[in-house]
Length: 133
Image (cartoon, rainbow, N blue to C red; front, side, top):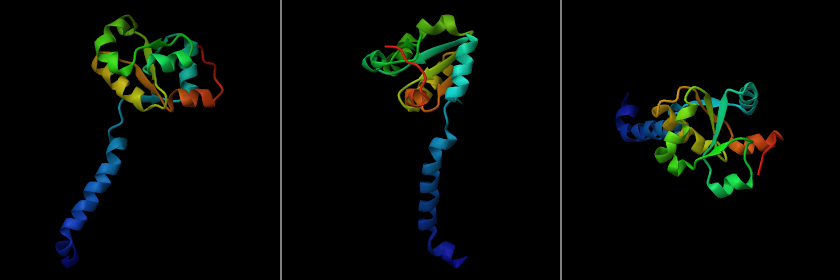
């Protein structure tokens, strides 16, 4: 007990730093979908793919039939997606980090089935799946 009292600040610092390391895991935004799950959803035909990368990155290669709205413009242009609220939306970025943020924005905008592609387009390409230019 004396050790805890003598080192209370050190223990507090350890708890805070541990919490900071766990925060991203605990704060996951939205649902994730693997590349396999995404391809199955796309093949069913009830899915819209939203690519939130910049237009230059999108032009270099993207999943077929994906819609491009950069994440910086998503809050202003979310109305363009209103006609797809009844469908599932798979949000794609380069590595899966930005798509989680975009998926959260879409959830707040009233979209029910929103998923972030785990690993982003990099994972899609790593599986050898086709892209369009």
